[in-house]
Length: 232
Image (cartoon, rainbow, N blue to C red; front, side):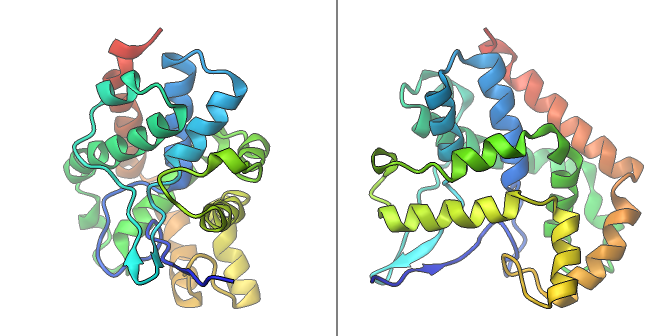
C-alpha cells in the first residue's frame, strides 16, 4: 500500500494562518448553496466535498500536493459549471476574504498570552457557527465518497482518508474535542494535551467576548453582502 504523509494545515501549523477551519467553510458554503444555486442533492454534496478539499496537503512520491487557488472571485464561483470545482473556488475565495476582516477586528491584542492565537480564533469561530450545521447530513456527505469523486489527480485513497479525518473532526464541536484530548491524552488533528489544557480555559473566556462575537458577526454579514449580487 502506498504511504502518504498528511499535514492537517487547517489545524496547528508552525506559522499563523489567516484562513477559516472546516465548520466555518461549510457554514458559508451552505449559505451560498441556499441563496445562490438551485443545486440537486447530489450537486450540493459535490459542492461541499469541493469546498473542503483545498486544505488537504500531503506528500506523494516526494511532491507536495496543493490544490489551493489564489485570486479567486465570486464571479468565478458563480460561473463554474462543475459543483465540486465551484465549491473548491468558494473555499479559496473565503480564505482571502477573511483576512482583512480579521485584521480589522484586531483580536490578537487580546491574546498576547495565548499560544497559537490564530488557531484559537478559528476554533472560536467554529463554536459560533457549529449549531447552524446539520451534522448528520454533513457526515453523510463526507462518508459517501464515490469512484467519480476523484478530482484534480488526487489519488482516491488520499481523498477517502482526508474526508474520513474531516468527518471525525466535524462529528464533535471543537470544545468537546479539547475535553476528549484531556481525557484520553491522545491528540486529535495535532491538538496536543498542552493546548487542550490552555484552550479549555480560553474558550469560555472569549467565546462570548464582545470583540469576538462582533468579529464573527461582521464576518458573516460581510459574506452575505458580498454574495448579494449572486442571490437567486
